[in-house]
Length: 473
Ligand code: URP
Ligand code: ZN
Ligand code: ZN
Image: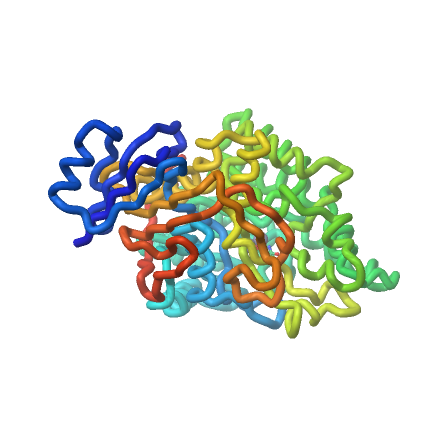
């Protein structure tokens, strides 16, 4: 078993920072000790295979991205990152765990679908991975399947209030799923948009000739997100189920979530980097068909309405607890261009898995969040929320050695030419300049990225059988 000493860095956990040396022994962290205490030197004399000098740098727990869609079939095509390419890109960006979604659409057996997703990932991932299960067809058998999946380590289930005929579950179906979750301890994840309202607005826009990507945003207004968020919260309250709202973009939805939390309800929520930085006006409204790069749902919101600043505020005040990517990339050629002349045919989703740690670190640089809060939002809370904490999300003896050495004085230029590693023919983050740099990434004790060189391999990543949410026990 190989031993690595990461010396002289500033160790950042969600609880605070300290100067410390980190000793990795095999796949786990063996010790975190004060530099100069002689302990590291004593260990060194017994022999380490490698010393990484982290002085002047941050040493943080590897990122946990709790919302990705590798090779997901969607809108007549398939998300362009496979488990192999997507987890490699994640590793480049300092993310060492993803939780992806196994997908059940109407008529399918959730257990069969889960096995299918296991086969897609098995032997292909560069970093560790787990699964949530999407349920779109709530039958007695799918409720029973929830219990079975929990035993497999799939402890969270996503329902959709939009995408009729594909993913949408009606309120009665959602209610039944929540009733079961209240019994079996699962966490319900919700895509909260009023699908019927959106379907009418989309149809009306197309009939008017408003077919450009910009109208994807205007036909999914914040009212549709606020209303669905409120409805999901009421259904959760009725059943006693815990609720996690995914990809929140509207400030009014955050207000609903904050109010529910203030009433004492177990309601949690994530936002994504796109809702912090990108907008309806500048991105969806880009000239020609370029806005298609930023078609995702919930949609980018109007900057003039203040949603982006409100998301930052929610992250600071803990009205929002997690930042995930909702990584669901599609190329412009052959995929996004399916919606030329009709925005409703543009596959929904964008690619961010490689950039989340960098993009959120800019919040530290800009004084919007603290250094420990960066780690908490990107690693610690997602690990706790989805039953991985202790192994993931923290630097402590006994934890998996998933470690990132991050250089606050480094620089990263995103997307210019083809500097990213996601399987996309463009970058939604083209031109973003990052103060900071992911120098070294260690996944379960193995250096996978170091000094601009990739050392990972498909199959290193293991399936994570997750426990119940550690926010509920
Ligand atoms: O546009 C998105 N978000 N695509 C992925 C599917 C989803 O709703 O999360
Ligand atoms: Zn969704
Ligand atoms: Zn998603």
